[in-house]
Structure formats: C-alpha cells, structure tokens
Length: 206
Length: 205
Ligand SMILES: N[C@@H](CCC(=O)N[C@@H](CS)C(=O)NCC(=O)O)C(=O)O
Ligand SMILES: N[C@@H](CCC(=O)N[C@@H](CS)C(=O)NCC(=O)O)C(=O)O
Image (tube, chains in turn cyan, purple):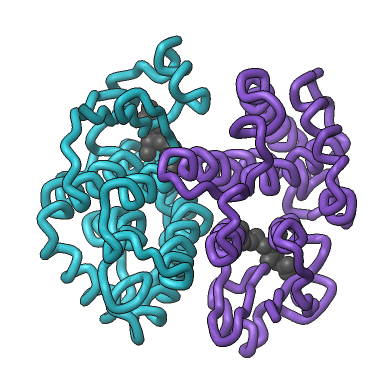
C-alpha cells in the first residue's frame, strides 16, 4: 500500500494526505519529523536526501516535495476535474500552487513558529506583525482572483486549491487579526464542505 | 506569438527564454522590472498582481510563476522529452523543479543579494556566511544525485528540471563564494554549456 511519511500536523504533509483523500487512494501514514525525529536516519535520507517531510513510497516509487506529490496523485489517481488535462486550466492551478510555496509560505512559517511553538514571553512581536501584514496582503491578492473565480483554477475545485487550502485553515485558526476578505471567506466555506478537508486539515494546530 | 514580460538579468525570466528555445521558438520579450518599467505600474499589476517577472501572454491567456510557465509551455507543445507523459516520470522532474524553487532559491538569496547585487539590506557577514553554507549543502545534494542519475538531474535525458537547476548551477559558479569541489556538478555544468540555449542565456546577469 502507498506509504506517506510525516507527522500529521505538518502543513506540507497535510497537502499530500488531503490530496490522497480527494483522489481516493488508500495509504498508511508513518509519523516522522518534529517530536518523532527520524529525518537523519540513513534509510530515510536514502529516500529523501533533502531530509524533510513529506515523502511517499508508492509501490517502490519514491517521491518528495509536497506539491509534486499532490500533482502526482492527481495525474495518477485523479480525474480530469481534480487534475485538469487542459494546459491552461492546469497552468493556473500550478501557478497558485507555486505561489503558495514562493510567496505565502515564508510569512506563514514565521506565524506558525512564533504563535504555536514559541512561549509568549519569547515571541518577536515585530516579526509577527510584519509576517501578518504580508500574509494578509497575499490573501487580499487571492481575494481579487476569487472575485471572478470560485476556485484557484476557475469554476471548479482542483488540486490547485490544496496548498492554499491548508494555509487558509491556519489563517482562520491562528490568533491573528484578519482583513475583511469576503471572497476568501466564501472559498474557505466551500473547502470546508469537502470531507477530505475536514478529516485532514481541520484539526487542532500545534 | 508568445509574449514574455521581464528582463534578461532575471534568472526566472531566463528559465522561460531557455524553455522556449528548447521548444524551437523565440518569444517576444518586453522589458519590465528593475532598470526598466516598474512592476508596480497598474497595467503590469493587472497581468500579475504579485508584481514579479516573468509573466507570459499566450493570446488572451496570462500566466506567471516561472516553473508553472515552463511546464505549461512543455505541456502545450506536447514535449514529453522535457516533461514526461507518465505520472511517475513526470513527478520526478517536477520534484526537482520544486526543490529548486523552495530550497535552492531560499538558500542563495541572501548571499547573492549581498555579494552580487550589493543590496544594502543584505550586508550582514554572518547571514551571508549562513546562506553560503546552506547553498553549498544544497549543491552537495545535487552532486550526490547526479552521481546516481548520470548525465542529468533525473537520468540520462535532459528535461525541464535541468533548465531550472542548470541556471541555479550557473549562478553558484558565478557568485564570488568559496565552493567545495563537487565533481559530478562540475561535469554536469560542462555538459550544460554544450547546449546553445544555455550558452546564450546563462551569462546575462
Ligand atoms: N519544500 C518542501 C518543504 C518541506 C518541509 O519544510 N517540511 C517540514 C514540515 S512542514 C519539515 O520537514 N520539517 C522538519 C520536521 O518536521 O522535523 C515541501 O514542500 O515538501
Ligand atoms: N516565484 C516567482 C519569483 C519571481 C521573481 O522573484 N522575480 C524577480 C526577478 S528574478 C522580480 O520580479 N524582481 C523584481 C524586479 O525585477 O523588479 C517565479 O518563480 O516566477
């Protein structure tokens, strides 16, 4: 059976788990990283020289990088709606996936590390506020896109919504001040109606 | 004709230019970005609200994010040699493209901005040293991988992964830092230099 390595509270692991739920492939998850350690173990490094989670083993086929895994699941196990064959629709899905990695992620790392994993008296309030403002500016940009689109790649949900959806949960659950972004609110509501999102992503942050 | 917005000195713009040459055509390049028209101009932000280059216009279709653009173009032109059709083979190419985007790009940024672009915000010597250490660590991962895969990042054949990783390799050699001896990377770099598109687009910074 498909194996997915990574602790269940990791944003990047949740992308892989949620995508697996969406395409309906069964998997075994193996705890790794954070308190579980194991990233430096030789057998893990042999699978993933980058020493991060997630990594998958699909019947001997090894893959890492969360977004590449999400797309692989879509391509291998998904249908044309979840992972569109049309180059333009897929291009948009991929654009927003890459944007999560290159733009949104660096600010969320700061918010997650500071607000969830740093004791209150040790927190760097300036760094938190800077990251919050930049993250909210990014969400405002996505809000404009959602004015004319129900989802990242257009009318329908695709796996292109997965990376952003994982961080949307963090946006609403972290104790931060949020801008009023009605289109992001409505998109987030649509995601919450998906069983895979509920099961994998809508879980306590830690 | 494909319109490309950006500037030659941008590594992310050069990914797209190189991809186009491998596909056998030249896009029309309009200069945007530092040293040229501002990316905060309303007509630019209307195309890419993220305010960065590259952006492509393919008829009425607009796309940004360099790696997504390269994959879109290979997909559209059905160049399965550059981006394989089978899910497993394709995902390995994408894995290394994502690795370039998330790992190498973050590792080099501080050192490159400080040492090459002389940015006033990137002058802290210990932050430069950290950035170099991480960069060299990432390049060592590439070295071990090439030792296993052979000629190129994912195997004996050249793919899109080699465009994005190849440009990063060029940047590693072109930045004044202390580099470890990485023999597989050196051989890879020499192999890339034989490609006309690489010779043309690597040295524009
Ligand atoms: N670019 C990689 C980044 C992976 C990553 O940073 N994973 C984090 C968890 S979200 C990790 O491995 N952290 C070390 C740990 O959990 O111990 C991806 O998207 O898969
Ligand atoms: N994640 C984006 C990053 C794009 C990016 O950072 N572009 C830089 C040039 S390499 C930029 O637009 N800089 C501002 C400027 O040129 O004025 C991508 O891969 O396309």
